[in-house]
Image: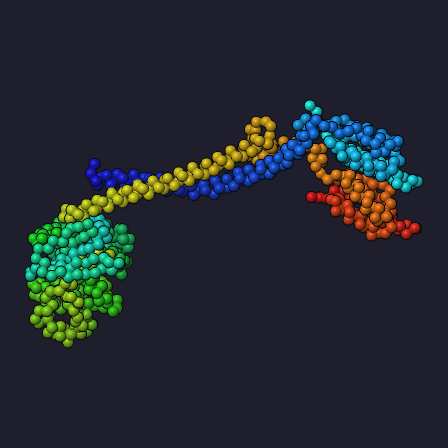
Length: 165
Length: 455
């Protein structure tokens, strides 16, 4: 192959490559916007998943925080009542347990106190919350007695959790 | 025969040094030109008996065909499109030549639109035999020019370069006076109109050529003398006669003896209009032919490299984008899968919806545990009791949970009721004072109610 035909062959291959390159470029420019849009949409979806993962991580954090108390359970509300309000009438009725997650169950109890000193009532609630695991006050209705100042009736809903193995 | 490639068109862009050679009956006149920092430096070389300019890399030798050997002729094609016109120029030239075009070498220079809407060009043509003879003459003088220019064009363009016209319509005549020959070049502004060999030498007879180009009615014409014979006897008288009878302005170019070789050397190094090389086809100099081939190969390789680069850039871009898309898709799927406890088959927004549902379900199960981490209701109740004591509030009923509050009782003043509303608002309840009624004993009976504030 002489130099002339070599140059022609190289040139022709070059022209073909250029044409292929131009065709690829045109195709790239044609699809550029849609591909960028698609990637942006995917990135947004990944961002949304990260937000959901943060929520899941928060829940995992809560479970990790209560995990050390897996072997513990809140003390008896009757006993606490006897300590905080000795001699006062009370009715403690625990509701059916609810399955939560990761082996934990939820416990709720209705506590009815009649004509008890408000200070003693507050002591009872505080003592319940100091338990490990604590009884937390979920709701309360306190009605002051009209005849005896500083006393009243109380209806409390207390709740706690307990790990069931 | 007239096939040309860019390297053969006048200026040798690859050369740094050129030699312009003028063959005269009394020896060879040579000018060496060198490109230096954007300008060209000329050196006249005298007494060159057996010149041996080394045909080194970057050196080019330029000779020229005389008007006896060549023809300059302006032709017009009736097409406005230059490409179309260029196709018919050879046929038009062939008609006007007294010999077959196949026996000639030719070039068409400076094609441009003509006044009649067609395209005109300056045809430069020489018989191949004349070119061979001229080359033989150079070789006999130990010179082998790579470029074979045309004297008429060289004299004209270099005269314009050394003495630019004052106006675009200035009429100019350049006369090369040799020892045994004379060349007359006629033009207006920057356009060359014709070039003629004067057998009789410079005389008033020259003016008969001008009648073909100018209307000689007192129009001022600039005459430029050059050539090794400008000092010959009688030329001064001729100038005086031309000046008096023809309203002519006669001037002589600097270093006039070396004007032609200077023009050839300069044109060989610099680009510009009307550059040409009639040493083409079978007569092409081996160096130029090699260089043409090299240019062709270099051009082809450059084209190939450009094509490969273009393809590589595109393929690279596609790989990068595909890689990025794959990474995003993988990250999406991995993240989504880590948030559900079963194999996730859904993709895209459907997968997000499934993850959202799974998390919602889990959140329901977590509510009781999550409440352990919220502020204690007992704390709110304790603080309320303290606040109520300060405001002398008598609370009859309080119903409180994390989402709502309802409170009835009496207070010493309305301000105490408002303070209590603020107390609950500060803790996230959208509390209102629903009723305040002053009682007989001056106290204010109130009802405060509210629910959780919207986030």
